[in-house]
Length: 620
Image (cartoon, rainbow, N blue to C red; front, side, top):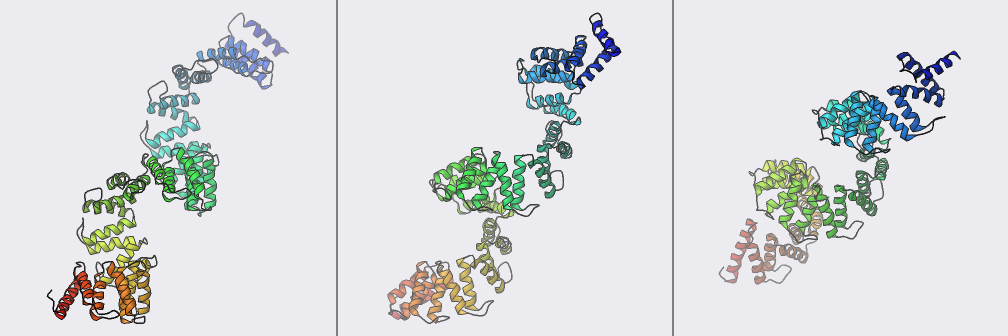
């Protein structure tokens, strides 16, 4: 009763004189107590007495009561804002921050005014208000009403960050990560990201994941990367969900699991992340963990491409180029490749170059092909580097230049392109654009062959067969021929037949020789066709049959095989399996004698012609 009476006397006395410090403290404590007890009306009355005496905290309290309303306190936004402004004018930091926010957003009757927003944020921030410090940093970072100044942004964000504002911790970390407004310092970036991440800030958790995934500023650690991605993904961070999907799709730090990859890609895609949509499309495109479905692949690629995802646009181009899930349409393929290529997608630039190189849907134009190949090649795209080198080697669309061909082949070969390794080996073998070097040729062919490049495997086999660039070794030759032959390489099948035919590195076996020759001959390998003819001619591994021998010789001879042409000449000269016919013999000998790539056969044909002329009495 005594305390209530004293307060009543105090309230009455305030109209007559300013409050003493003791009186203010008594009223403030009474207001706080009433508020805690849920007596809003009494609390409001006490705060109003203090506010009218110029107390900034009380003025701010009146703003809160009037703005929100309470038991016994009617809501009155207009009066609330008046008290807010009074509190702000008396340097109440929270009031200044809110006033700045109202000017920033143009709300509650305040005209949007970036300048006034900044002024009030600065007043609040200089008093240590963390939220105002963060907002002020944002103003300088975005250049809102002031020239953009990332250094100033860093100053204010770091102040807010030290007070535990997670968004500020993340933002100052981002500045240190990129070296914007502050010297680049990956260690500091990581420290700030860790502080924000510990508060559950998803973007920082994601960034930490990328640090550990790439080894940026920390030892590369896929397990740590996954842990951070999972924290962010659990908060529906789409990029983290996509990266988790990638880890499962590639089996990085986890057992490969396309089902889990698909689940994470679907979560990211459902949020509209183009990378998630693209990756989901790729699963359907390749039938990885799902039934291959080009239609669904196209649907997801289209969603991603509509958001500017270049990889999706490129893959759409491939679907139209190959007629997968859509009718083949080179025009649409080109359109999609062009969209992706305009974004400097190297794969699309290479694919566009291939359309011009092959004349698919466009007039064949090697010069245009070279332009697109070079765009991709300078980005380090190995396939384009190899394709550009081929044009320089062949002189198509560019002046023939073996040196440039060798340079581009080497760039691609160093990146592991098996085609470029093979092509570079061929240049060393022939001494074009580089000094001829059988050993270097062998080395590049070996690198390519190890990647299952059939052309390189058969070439490596021939080097072992001939002892060029490496000691002669029929056993190793056979091993490499077999690798290429099982891939259907006709030249390798021919050479395997030759090994069995001659008993080189294997027991002589005409039946095996015939089997391999037949495989190669079915693919129109002229050497194999000729050698089959020889087997039938001699009855080796088969019943002797001049008719079949002649038939195989004719197939090979029609392709310009000099030995087969010479053998046909012998057939007609000797009249074996055919009526003797010197005119036809001469015709075939002359064809063989005109060949320049097989000097031994050419000379034999010339000698046969001389003998034929002696026999027939005609001068050569």
